[in-house]
Every structure is written in structure tokens, then in C-alpha cells.
Image (cartoon, rainbow, N blue to C red):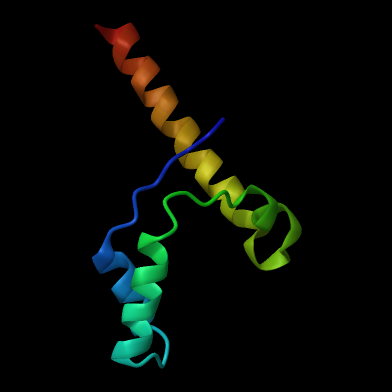
Length: 76
């Protein structure tokens, strides 16, 4: 299953604020994000222990959305 997130500029800037990035560095990161229309994180999540649980968490949420949608359709 493929799950898509739209990441807003404000979200990128909030992440940059968590790091000791200068305004120039934050703007450079934002520009790089704008030049990257799509990013597949599947391999990164599979291979990097720091992100191994991310795909599981997204899967759990996606399944809950699907189940809730199905439940709502059945209840009609």
C-alpha cells in the first residue's frame, strides 16, 4: 500500500527550528524540499533502525482510517 503525505512549508520550517540552523540554511532546506516533489522512504525505514518503527506507525494509522471508512460505509 502506498500512503502519501503533503508536507507544507510551515512544517519544514518548524523542523528546521528544531536544529541550530540559520535563516539561510533553513531557506536552502526549503528550496531543496521544493525541488523534491516525491520521496520514497520505504528503503530508509526498512534499513535504518532509527526509523524502523515509522512504517509500522503509519501502517497502523492507515489501517485505522481504512477500517473506520469501511465501518462508516457498512453502517449506512
